[in-house]
Image (cartoon, rainbow, N blue to C red; front, side):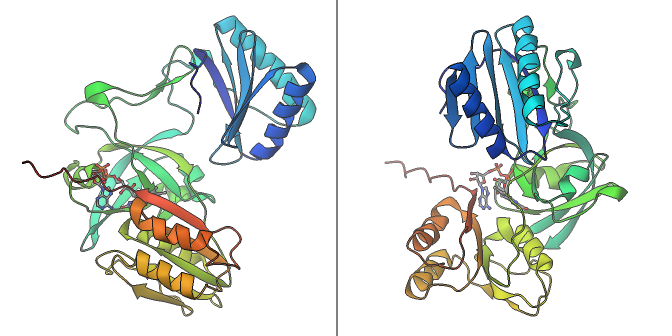
Amino acid sequence: MRRDPLPPFQAEAAAPDLPYAQLAVLIARLARTRSLELHVGHGRSSWCKLAGGEFGARMGPLGSIIYVRGDDRTGLERLRADWDADLAQQFPGLALDWSRLDREGAPPPNFSLARLAGVSRLAGAFLRLRIEGPDLDRFARQLIHFRLVIQPNTRRAPVWPAIGARGQVIWPKGADALHRPVYTVRAIDAGQGWMEADVFLHPGGRAARFARQAPANAPIGLTGPGGGGIPQASRLLIGGDETAYPALARIIAAQDQKAVGECHLFGKDADYPFPAHPGIRVIHAPQGEAALAARLVRTPTKAQAVWLATERSALTPLKAALDAGAAPHAPDPHLAVYWTATPKEPPHE
Ligand SMILES: Cc1cc2nc3c(=O)[nH]c(=O)nc-3n(C[C@H](O)[C@H](O)[C@H](O)COP(=O)(O)OP(=O)(O)OC[C@H]3O[C@@H](n4cnc5c(N)ncnc54)[C@H](O)[C@@H]3O)c2cc1C
């Protein structure tokens, strides 16, 4: 993890078609040939430090994000020009739209403002949000998750994130701090300017409170996309609790009609409307993560794609089963923590 402070002046540019791995190779080569200090963060980012700042890249929601950071404005511009030249030499034709210091006050590049056009009851414990706005195209590509950006109080004038004087993104703080939970795009028609997300109503959830109480056409922020895409295979093993039901529905809908498999629902109820599929058996097993893990240890699955998402501690036995070889034909199983249960307070003496 990075411990030193970030240089204060920043600029970045999205390169959605350039895989991060290619940039990591270039950055490592530049570090080696120019004797620069190379840093690598968990295989997802690399940067070189040099006098006046640093340049680097990280994995983006699509492709890569290329960045430069400087100790002052002049240093930033100098480093950006040098980094641009190296990139142009290595990747001729790469067109970068750098965030600029003179864009102070503009929204961050992956943020857009939309409105809550409607809320409808979908199942006992789900509300469906209809979100309308411009610039939804990016949510209609392969990544299916995004963050809702919700104001703390719908009666106050909203304060949204903006690019600061030094090119950095400034998120509102204190009473204006925004809530940013992750959701799944359940349906979208970017051309018509709408998308839908299904919110599971768990006790104390701020997103559900917003959905229930927000006035008609309340402004809502969107960031992303991010997370994963949709697996496709001829044999699948998928499952999750309520928070994963919208993603499971999208996975089922995207499969070939000849695909076969199991979809395990670990939530309390199973009245969420899943699309019908002739070969995928939907199995309702409330809190059945550990039982499925035990079954997989006894009898490994023949599935070529495994996709499981649920609460953090409930995921642990499934992860252990897969680590022990429970899915020998699925080279890259997707296991995701979708939420974390808050530990209960110990009883008072
Ligand atoms: C990639 C990804 C995609 C997701 N897609 C969806 C989706 O499409 N629909 C959806 O409903 N959720 C989805 N989730 C889960 C959602 O982000 C979390 O449940 C999130 O905490 C909801 O925020 P909130 O405002 O409701 O709760 P918060 O106000 O942040 O949390 C309040 C309390 O509720 C607890 N809590 C959070 N989730 C649950 C839960 N499911 N059951 C019981 N208690 C809970 C928290 O631990 C906390 O104590 C997704 C998560 C990820 C990582």
